Length: 116
View 1 (cartoon, rainbow, N blue to C red):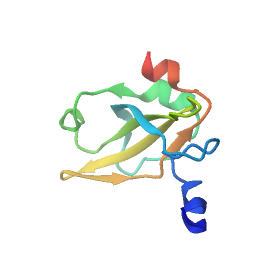
View 2: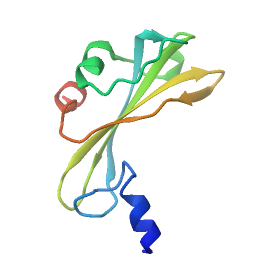
View 3: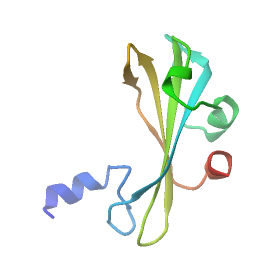
């Protein structure tokens, strides 16, 4: 692996910063954000916001027009077992996803809420 690859990997969510290896996608879930609509999105990095506002949905079609959704992905390192959760808020628009900047939780802040 080249020097540039090593540098870029440090900023990827699916790369263990401790072991320097690729993490495995452990779980994935889709949620609606009923209190967040078109024109009212604000980036939130507080786990409590997600705990209060996420509503589990089975598929994208269950999200009403103009309402934001959020994909939650948990990655796990096969070497050290470290887990991280990535929250990916997006607005479904005509079959496409208009993604906002994702939020990374590296210390288990959402594990009990999302995955139990």
